[in-house]
Length: 322
Ligand code: GDP
Ligand code: CA
Image (spheres, rainbow, N blue to C red):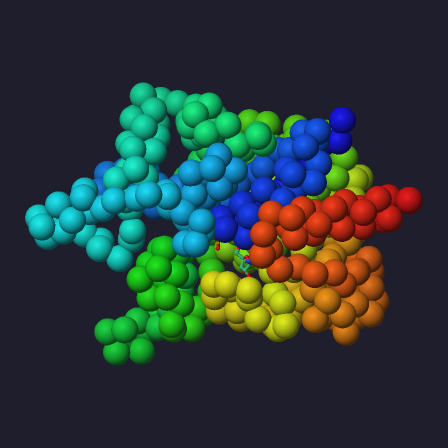
């Protein structure tokens, strides 16, 4: 049986995983999920990327939106707003609230996030093993110009930058606060060491995959695993397919091109890289950097197209192995 490890963010990671699962239904897939986006709201621990993966693979996702629950209502949010209690910019629906209540209750009882995630997945049956990158608290912060006009800079939580400010101002730096002290969650290093192939889905290279790689030990374990590591570009035609990855790429000095993202990961980590057919011109530059590269369609328009992307990634892994 093929053992596949995938480092995943939210929407891009989750949609890719759905295609991967359908391309290789017999494979044992372990997902290492980003928790740098986690935030405490209304006294509750919210893990947006873990939940997006869990809901997407479990059939509970709001398809068009890509995050949150299908058939959602917002009574609790409206009641909180009536008390003047915010933030109003973060959309938590009633069904979603239940997940965060269960999670927070279990954490309060002393269970680590990895055990809580496993318990939540017992309901959703995502068909993959979903592990948080760490059980420790890590929160991605973004450094922006202070809007108070003082000329200084200020750090805001990633969700405030992304959701409230919609990445409308420049990001000067992206800092995964707490990552340096964090330990990989139980099972993460074991899954990487036991993998036949490791995939980077078209997730955000900075605030999703980059944050996972910032947990000491994970990057090293991947580089030392001695198995093919293949990534798929989230940048198509020199722009993110959705979201604002260009803003956080600029913060780390990386151009928003498929080739620049491959170089950012580097040949020390990546063996293979898939770019979209529209970026076929980037293939020679990536190969010169020591990373095997192919141009194939990379738009996750439906599950079948996404499964084809996963098949291409596994084929490239087979090529670099040989
Ligand atoms: P987030 O945590 O919800 O932002 O999700 P991820 O980090 O997992 O994925 C975000 C990235 O997915 C963005 O940078 C998008 O460019 C990328 N993305 C979304 N849809 C597609 C698609 O259909 N094809 C490709 N190649 N990338 C995509
Ligand atoms: Ca995310």
